Amino acid sequence: MPSLVDPIFPMKADIPLSASDLHSRITSALISDEAHAWQPRGPESVGLPKQMTTLEKYDVAAPFIAIPAIDENGKKLTFSEQATHWALQSLPLADDNNTWSNPTAATEQIELQYGDVLPKPNVQWQETTSDKTMSLLAFQGLGSHRLERVNDDPDAAYRVALSWRVAFPVRE
Image (cartoon, rainbow, N blue to C red):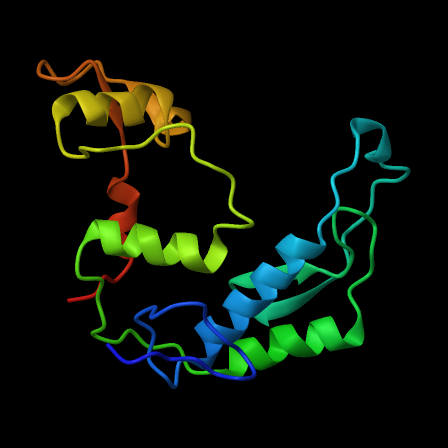
C-alpha cells in the first residue's frame, strides 16, 4: 500500500485511510495534539460546581450531537475550536473498502500512530468468540452496566439486552 503522508495532516504510517478522508486525517492530528498537550492534575483541581444551570452548548450534528461550550476544566472553547468542529462536521463521511490485512497489522499501525499517547492496555483479548469471553464481557466488562436477570427464559439466567438497537440501520 502506498504511503498516505500529507504535509499538513501527516500520518505516521500506512494507515488504510483514503487519501481524500480529510475528516479522519484532521481528527487524528487534533487528537494527537490534544493528548500531547494534556497535563495531569491532582484531584484537588476538580472543585465542586458552584451553581446548577443549563450548559451552554452548540450543535455539532444537530439534533444528535451537541458539545458544551465550556470543557470539564472550565475552559471556554475558542472560536477556532468551534470553527474546527463546524468544519469537521461539514466534511463528507463515507466508508471505504480499505481494510487491515489482519488484526496484528491494525494493532501495529495504531501503535505507530498513537503509541506515545495511548495508555497500555491492562488486558489483551486474544480470543473473542468463546462463551468464557462473552461471560467476562457481560459480567466484568463492557456489558456489565446493562446486565439484567432473566426470569422468563429457562436457558439463561442473565442477559445484556440490546434488542432496542434493531431500530437503527446497519451497513451491508
